[in-house]
Length: 129
Image 1 (cartoon, one colour):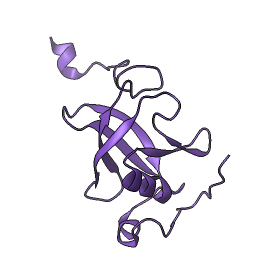
Image 2: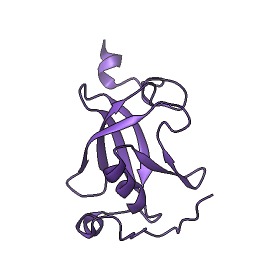
Image 3: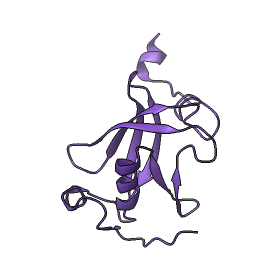
């Protein structure tokens, strides 16, 4: 199992200009939204530190930090449901990463296409109809 400090990983492998801009949480992580590059479909939310972001940028495959397993994981290494990186962007506050990917198979660990398929909540507009 990988050891990881609970403070930001300022790994020199990540471009220092990017590392300086990132606004990490107290645990050193930033949320990373995976989105299907051609349809705009939101697939999942994962977590990245500097090392995971560096690996994502340099390998072309999404790497996340698993908070439950306390280790890095490359999406698809065990499931075969790979995320091929098309682009990576920071939001305006540099506290969230958007990774546009070509998703192969299910993005969700439950086997659903996205992590947002199963529990759609009613909105005010739904109640008015």
